[in-house]
Image (cartoon, rainbow, N blue to C red):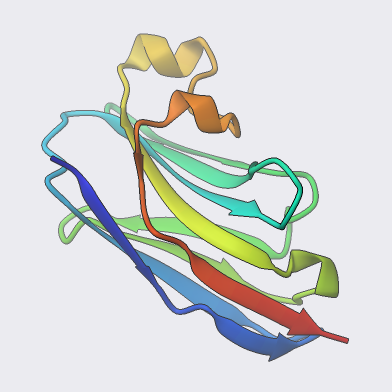
Length: 132
């Protein structure tokens, strides 16, 4: 059973930085997709960044965070991180870590993207608040 535990959320001023971490346990797949999603009240959960890890490593980002956020994976320790720089008030949301066992074929079919329905395991979330 996969367990995901996020940490690192908090408050920041616009233009500041925060780093989120997600400790993943029970991930025994040979290849998988990990991702960060965010959600604000009344809105659907949206993909922020994903990383496919298997025969290669590939990252995707939402247009709204490209150039500001960086997703990374410490595969030896199963820690997923999201470095968030130049934060904006619109980045305020609950951030969730997600994981899914995926093959290379799944990746080629676009399953390691920003669609929350493609992910089986979720963390409890960590709040990020950015003030102007």
